[in-house]
Length: 142
Length: 490
Image: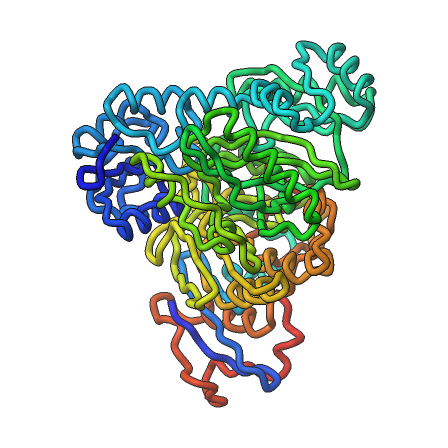
């Protein structure tokens, strides 16, 4: 947890940096963002499981899938709740649920891996976003 | 009535509003008691109180009996409810008075008269204040269709029992009514245990303009208006005063109507009368908030009046302050733990780093501190940042600067979004309407390349190694950003 000054194209910028167990928060004048660990998926190659991570700290109020289950893009995986609002986590792509890392009623931290999804063969190698908190696909607070 | 020497106030709330009330109590020399739920043992609002009491039950701040028991145990003589929780509960106000505690707010009778939407609308009509056409209670969607035909489409369905956008639906045409009516009924029933709905004519584009009132039970004054049109999901985001969109005639009419309604109801303490102002400048009574409001600092900044101190003075039987002439312009931004670019998804978590700017024209009302946390059990308001300027543009620039100088790490916030809105042409021109925020596309602001590089370096460093401090602009340090950094994207 510190402030650092960086220089970029002649401009001095003050950044704030705070590591957590699951990633790092970086702030700049007027904003901040959480960055998860760098993805190793390009190295792991196509067909590596996609991890759906918690986009916020909250309680898991519903787990809608089980290991082995086939899902298609935008299918509901689970519902998180915080501050009386519900957030639906949906499948970022077609695939098969490899593992579910949380249970209903459990509190999960921002960035925690919740579901591992093996891509369907036809989808293998399809590009996917590199946003730090994966799994924000589609959802909106219900 | 508690005398000056004997008064001791329990604040039945948490977060920024509890902290704000404690500051005034300290300033005017009134001893105070804070309460906290079981998950709030380390909450920031406890720092500013003289004594602390635990609310053990699962209902926490909503447990009226526990609050009164805590007040008695600590020897408090009065209760300040803040906003939300039990602040608008006539039953709680009565229970306080029955327990010999002064309720720092309106009487239960005034709450019933003005807090209930239908009753307050009737009272407003009796005072000759214009109301929105419609507003009959509808049991079925057929009733609603008839009411809508009478006032003209589109219409707004509203819950009789509450606010905050729950149970509210905009219905453009009759074909959509059945489904919207059923959904609104379900929501209203779940949120307020009362599924009844009102139908109102939908006025657009409309400004939300409200008037701060203070009453002593006999007399009442209007302290000026606030414009709160910028809302998302019926929750205000940016508030300002005076309104940039009304003229002197409308302003005088709003203030006069608000004061008249407060007098008619025998209103005591602080409250807010909300109006909609239509495109033609016509104003319509909306509702009364029978409590201190989140955005009350806007009025404090332009009048120099401490509204909480005035509430305490009125509760002690003191006189109403003379309404000061407003000076300059104030704007408030609500810093929320939410992600505006993911459906305003709330974000709870630890506050890892926190640094507020200190400026003579800037006020921060915060409910968290560094090392604390934003709890998922409560609402997402972290702090209010309010600036004053001699005119609107100066207040706006000061608020943007203040937001840029704010550092908060650990939860997603709407910090960048607030700056984006304040810097938009829409806001600069004062073209703020209730639908503006949700109708405008707000592209996600770009992350500076240097931040991405800093994140990669921090992640690459061994855990626990710290992030290192490069010191001032050391070109050889690992934090100096290479020239090609601009091509990197998160």
